[in-house]
Length: 114
Image: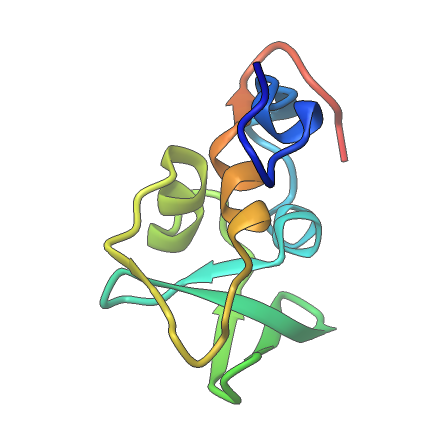
C-alpha cells in the first residue's frame, strides 16, 4: 500500500549505482557534484575550473576551494567512504541528491569507469 503523497517509485528501493574506486579524482567530483570540506560539511558544487593538476571549486554557497588531483587525499577518501558530518544549509542540497549519493557504491573491480 502506498502512503498518501508518495508514489510507488519513491517507495520502491532506490537503484544502486556502481562506479570504479580508483578513477581520476576530478572525474569523480564532476560526476557526484558534492564536496566534503575539512570540517565535515557536505557542499554542492556549482562550478569547477580545472587547470593542470589543480582545480578551483565554487560551491552553491559561494565558497571557493583549491583542490589538487589526488586519489589518496582526504576529500577523495571521504567521498569514497561517504563520510560527512553535516550538510551545508547555504548550498541547499536536495534530499533526492543525498539519497542518490548514499545509494552509490564504489568498487575496485566492478562498475562504470566514468
